[in-house]
Amino acid sequence: MPDDPTITDAIRESAAGPKRAEGDSGSVEQHDLKDQIEADRYLSSKEAAKKGLGVRMTKVVPPGAV
Image (cartoon, rainbow, N blue to C red; front, side, top):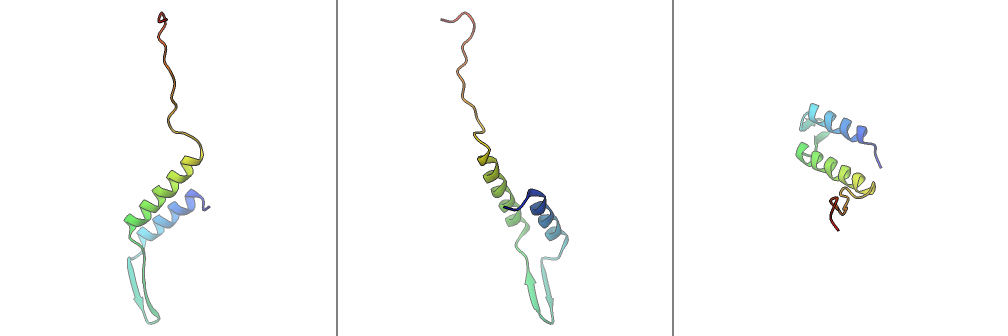
């Protein structure tokens, strides 16, 4: 699984470059930045889900209640 800084660097590099480039050997088009950000959020959420539950359920009993 790639590290988060690697994904962040890839998004930053993609945003700095052109969306489409053409030359004598052919043309290249990158994925939309929106799609890359959604992919980064998805991978981050999967990594966070591995760490455990984000919500802890507890029972609160006020003092003096029986």
